[in-house]
Image (cartoon, rainbow, N blue to C red; front, side, top):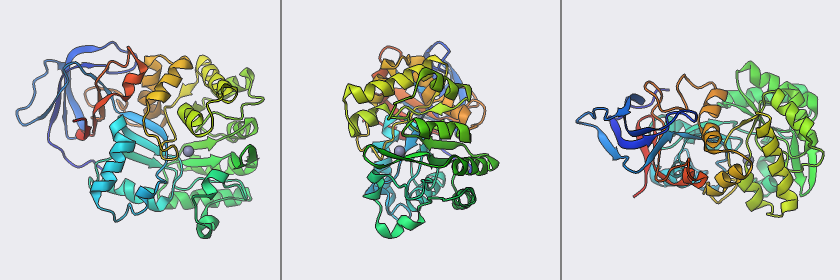
Length: 390
Ligand SMILES: [Zn+2]
């Protein structure tokens, strides 16, 4: 669906980082019209009817992706009918206030996510682009213990827990009919704290093949070595977390994930804040991310926000930096890497003439401090200001 028309917008005199790999354009002015960037140059002329955001002393980068979010909190429950105000407030607090212009919902209640997505696309709600897995697929009797508590018992039966490859294909087809954009599998599910139930490989493979027939990416929550191995061998495209029970996950295994061109979403702050900060737990997870990166693997930024109730992203950027990602690599994980992985149009994920006008204005230079990626002064999607700090 095309984005609704918006008045021209100009961001004047910012330091612009057009791509993760190009040097900055000092005192750059960007002009956006009809959802796209139409000019980018120092002193580019500003149309007289444009809304102007001052960029002096600020830093402009492409709009961010968050490749792991959920709309499971009570605030989204009536998304189809709730007034726009409180929903927009929620989207700002959780997402657009942190620079996210596109988010990947890796499984929520489709009765919340689908109306949210529809209302954003119709221009009724100022929010990010939403790509959704609709409902994730679990192993039989494999709903995680931390989800069971949130789901009323009487709808648990509709949560897909396929017992055979044929049932997995049917579950994928049903999600696609509902409007899913991607597949999310639990190839390893924590059915109790410390106890992982894995999905059978044949079931996972049937689901992935069905998703791929619809040109959809498959994400997986692995939990442990076996969950990651099943994901890899079933053809999954992206691990939505590193395996956090990292026992047995060695360099050769991590290299095999990179060789299969799998993407990885680190979600490091989530592990630290919702499980434990014990280095005996976090150290090996950081080690997997560091090795994955060293072998040239593709990191996709994602936080598991929505499940994680603390929305700030500062700590995730610092944790990524500790795992060896420099500002360039972090910016790629936020922009060009997910845009390419999801097959976005040419130029998406960059600030360039002709590209979608998805932009983030930062109050501090992210190339001098990774935490600056969370000093968001304004967020623009398709040329429309979604968030501006007062
Ligand atoms: Zn999640």
